[in-house]
Length: 327
Image (cartoon, rainbow, N blue to C red):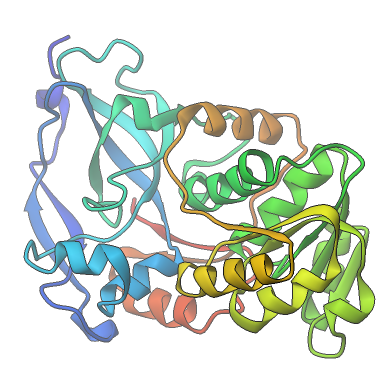
């Protein structure tokens, strides 16, 4: 298929870059040429770009991605985008200009989401359900895939099982509780008192205030624990597992010590890293279409407010997700 690149009115775009690791002031908005899609690629006019904790950690120079990209700066962060296809490269037959798409793109080393236009490979993209606006959809892929893969691939959650989700009101957490409910599980979540009503409205069966209650005193016989906090929280939660239960911990920095602690106690725990999977995204889109899952956005930011967005992101305690409105 010929590229439809010449249908675009603009020739330049804005994107966020940083030239070095550091605090929020390293984030800059610059102009650059709009790229052309190569074979197998799609050019997206980005409407929404989701923010994820890995974004600020990498910006500060922490973690695997930072080690890999330090010699290839400037770098544009962002793995989550949704928008409209404006051009396709050769060999792309599944998507066409005008399609509404979302995906986890450029993971882990290319990034590129914080931008007015982004390149993606066609196999990274799913069609966005009509029920979801494109800015909101940009917040979905990475968090939703993390929750989905942790619950259903690693923990193999079944209907009727009891699952505890730590930080149930956060970006991954608020999607995980909804997926578990849609699968017919009994869902318990930890949250601060201020998020109790939010989680109750999503249908969570029991909400535990982590400020006042120790999980190990409150829960026992659990089939699955999804640990989105890590560290001591993850280790203490092992005591709540039933026979044959499994804990899946997401923060990579403490995963090894939690898995080791589980082994010492004869229990099962796994760390995991999310990966792009368009088939999972399609299943998630179906749940949104059916009204079983909603994406909650705490705050929208424009591209030039990226530093404020990172400030809120770094502080933690975001209810749902943050998203850059790149239109």
